[in-house]
Length: 70
Image: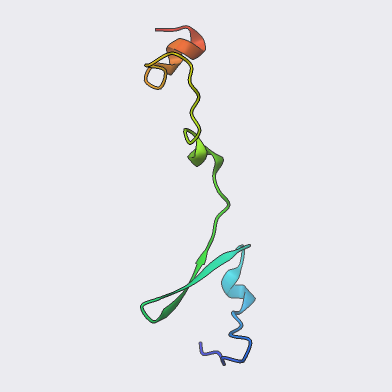
């Protein structure tokens, strides 16, 4: 497919972006790259702000502290 570049840029057909809410547009090595972005996954943020709990092995033995098991 070819598209005319206007003073406002280029229009990408909506059917190319089905199910996509947001894209990242970047230019790299003479190419224009359009990449769908995803909403951040909260599981990936775990551990970014750890708390002090006084148990030096809590990350390795968390079951012991959560459930009282060994």
